[in-house]
Amino acid sequence: MRIRVRKIIKHIDETRLENGRVVDPVHRVAFVGAVIENPYPSEYVQDLVTLADELGEEIGKLIGPACVELLGGEVEAFGKAALVGIEGEVEHGSALIHNLRFGNVFRTAAGGTELLPAAEKVGLPGSPIDIPLKHKTDAKTRSHHQTVTLQVADVPRPREIFVVCAAANAGRPLARLAAFGAETKNQ
Image (cartoon, rainbow, N blue to C red; front, side, top):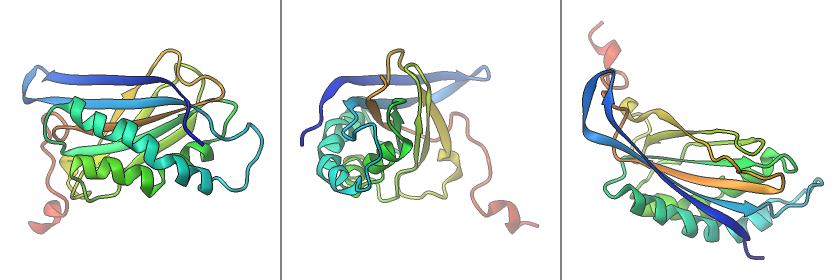
């Protein structure tokens, strides 16, 4: 089976000022997503893994490297998400994005070693999807824990899944929390 793609979404978000302060370097987040026909019928299907294994790498190749390219520089943080149309179930999105054949393509393109943080949900067209990001090689790097939101007016339609990769060039703008574990060292 081949994926059926209705559209590809590419979006770049740049934060130049945060709380009145200049963000240097500019904080960039790239999003690339594919709006695909839900490969699972609207009734219950026991085996989601076989088809997800078949489609995962194809979806990963379509959006993972494109996300890294759109960012236009070194990836420091990354994440993934699936927004399932209302005739599907959250497990349909989970099957596609919690699949190493999908994730490894993006992880390799981004130069990452950590697991990709993820979010998945069912929603109406125009529903926002919040995508968690973590540092690509050290998930304990607090400055890179962030959540970004993407919303597209006509996505997903009832029998679609919106699969998204997100990549950032840095941690949160103006991050200044203590490193993990540092707050207890001096007490």
